[in-house]
Amino acid sequence: MDLLERLIAVFAENGYVAVFIALLLCGAGLPLPEDITLVAGGVIAGLGYANVHAMAAVTMVGVLVGDAGMFLLGHHYGEHMLQWRPIAWLMPPRRYAKMQEKFARYGNRLMFFARFLPGMRTAVYITAGATHRVTFMRFLLLDGLAALISVPFWVYLGYFGANRHEWLVMWIRRGQSSLWVLGGLAALVVLILWWRHSKRKQLAR
Image 1 (cartoon, rainbow, N blue to C red):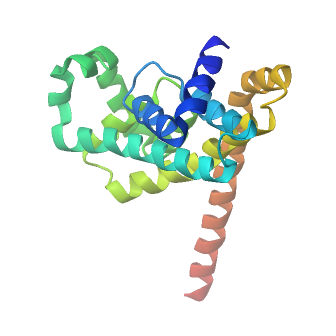
Image 2 (cartoon, rainbow, N blue to C red):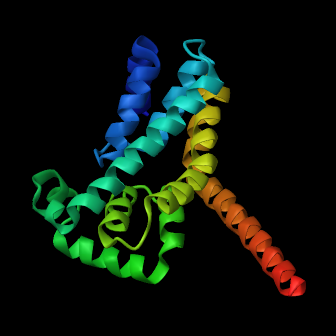
């Protein structure tokens, strides 16, 4: 957890701005784990350096802006981005082709669950933009719904575990599987609501 401790030190000294910038870098695909960054933001709130609710709001905006940036770059530049050195390193042509196949097969579901797949988010968001099959508003809605699950989870985990190091480390390790459960439950609720809405429309006819 050396990275977590270093982030806590940086964020405690520089506050919300540092957390926001770090999340933009996460969205750009830099090897900085988004979950650890969010936890560190929550920890400094738990230590009294920030307000936890304001931190949750700042991190939500940082995550969405970073993700939207990757989507819009993919939308405007498409496959030309693969020639840019940082993007070529992050997503070589073979990986881009595989991502296109997955996107064609899973579409909206892939955009939603990419939030819970570390290491795949940036590639998925760039591909979503490059395919021109998804509007920006649909992307933002799906990404925002997923972020409403993951971002508060990590931030408040850091907040409540700020003074309980062993407990925090344990839940960071368990966190990804817990998020899969939460994401699955959220998807199930959405499907049930959609099914009930469809039934009502049919009965109204």
